[in-house]
Length: 174
Image (cartoon, rainbow, N blue to C red; front, side, top):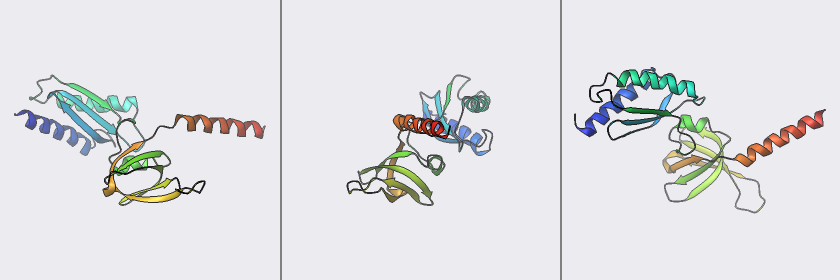
């Protein structure tokens, strides 16, 4: 098999395992094969993905890849969640990030930042700061066809602030 053909065949084997439900209710976000034998599968699920689930998926895929003659038993398989360094690609990913701050690059070159409020059939609804000083935020509908890339922003300060607010409320109740 030619290198491109072998990689396509391996991709098909891995994708089939997910399509057939052999890897649970998880889905592939990205699949990268380099050097013909370095295989990285970025996986997600509606409820996220933990280490035990990654191990189970790895064992399932290893049993398939071990039987693949083009690999000859020589390959490196990495199973991982996409993490915050990879953009959102699928509606299922957007749904689980409702309420989170997103950095959105649009196809026209513009960027917008806002809180994901809702997933729509053909796009997303985000709450963005108003252009008027001290005005309430406004909701903006963005069609998927206008989105080039969406990244979830990590907000460490917000988490600490929310924890402090909860502690303050508990103390007031006592």
